[in-house]
Image (cartoon, rainbow, N blue to C red; front, side, top):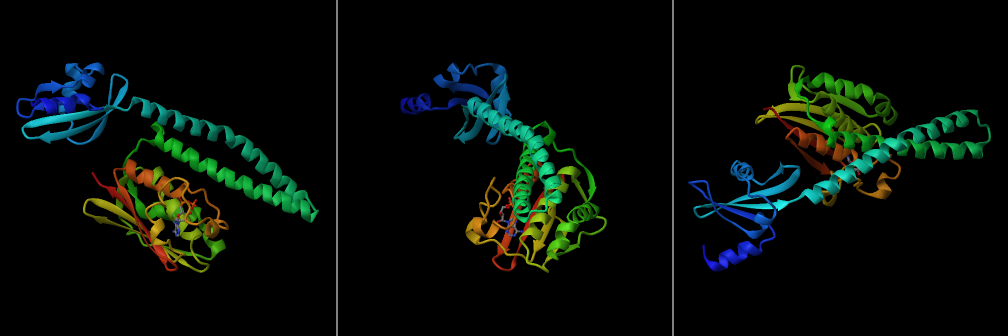
Length: 311
Ligand code: ADP
């Protein structure tokens, strides 16, 4: 190994491990690797099993590992991401705790406002109470979505796979949203074949489908239509929700799955939402090893697709 190369490796912000590719023998490791105490055989044998960029846990610490092949050598760049993980965990715990704490007061405010509203005769006071009710319902929806996300990111988020008959799951979703659809005069068609079975977590896919169908109703026009479809395609089950709604401008499409992203404050103002629904959808697809996709034409409608790999 030349001096220049050694100098670069020694100055790298990563812990660098260089192995002989064939003999799997450690040829060189830089100062950073020595300082991090990553010299143990246990750690190096862990590295040799890694063949793509991954995150690993070792003795209570977290590392991001990137393997590279350089000529006849196998190089591993290792970064200690424990501080980042600690920060992320603290942030998640904080959001989950605050959401739990807010749940009860919000529902108390809501039920008191509701009782007073029905008893009140004065139109002005009724108007104020109506506002309290509307806002507390929005807060309740936000807290519910935050709690769903927190649960998905915690141990409860573990995917428990079973064979799920998708058509009847979609029927349950439709039943759940019946009132909402009737109110908006939106017709929903369940076009999932009766015998299609999906290997997935039934409760989580129910939440995913409910969010997609709820959006398809919410962002639809009065008298519009929604189709729910599913099929097997290249080892995946593809679930599709199509609507005849307002659509989404192209420039927003890459962002709509981000947390709290709402396309246009003015267009969504009248439509109640938290901006969390699609990030829940994306998260559920990801923990199943799958992905999401969207096609949309402004003024015509949207198609959301979710791919769930089957083993
Ligand atoms: P929200 O609670 O605002 O509905 P989502 O995360 O579910 O949050 O969706 C993010 C944004 O994407 C929405 O605010 C809306 O502007 C847009 N969107 C989602 N689904 C649809 C749809 N079926 N048709 C049109 N716009 C949609």
